[in-house]
Length: 103
Image 1 (tube, rainbow, N blue to C red):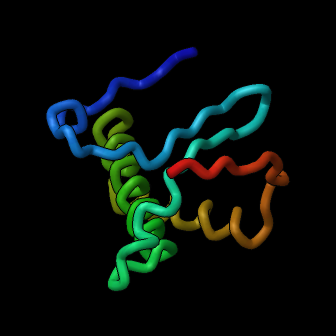
Image 2 (cartoon, rainbow, N blue to C red):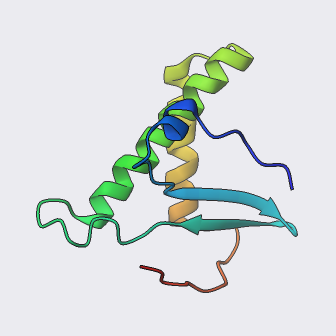
Image 3 (cartoon, one colour):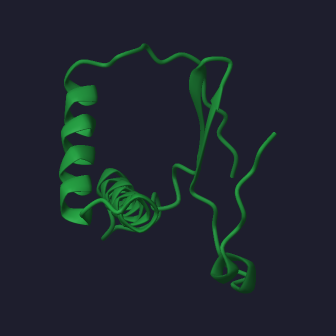
């Protein structure tokens, strides 16, 4: 398995929490998610928190594409948003699998 490095801040912070992992394996996308972190927070809705997390990830991807490939980060983020919305409207593949709830 080819894992990415853990960011320095996550290693330094004893209370850091891994929220998402994504792999491409066996010709498909596989994820591990930490869902339920916000279930005890009356002022934070879980789906809204995940929207912000995914938006932040998209911005990091756009910045990485700008740094590594010279793309304009604004153009990159618009292309990411377009692909995201297209995939939500008409998924290119089905989802399968299950969920394990751990507390």
